Length: 130
Image (cartoon, rainbow, N blue to C red; front, side, top):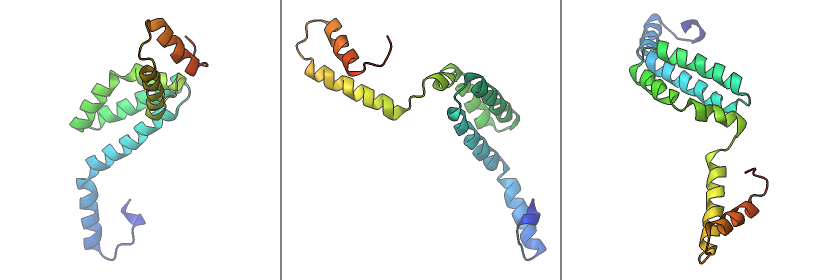
């Protein structure tokens, strides 16, 4: 790996090797963080599950305690993560939907029943199934 760098002397190569070894955990965490981002690009649940299992195995084998702890906590959210394959909504879309509902709610001041309020919401989002 050190052969790809143009280092002038042996001392520089030894220093680079020490720096890389000292930051091995940081590099591992960085690479795994980047790999985890790709999980949200899958459109098929089976592929996403396989990618998750590979990532989880790498995280557990890394030996980095904070990363292992994070992976364990993230495992609880796997159903929601895999649901992203079917319904690819990001936070900006959800914030937009919530904002429209808030506007309808402000305009709905004085409605006597919830059914009419929900009908108004459905009229704003006609393509969403019940």
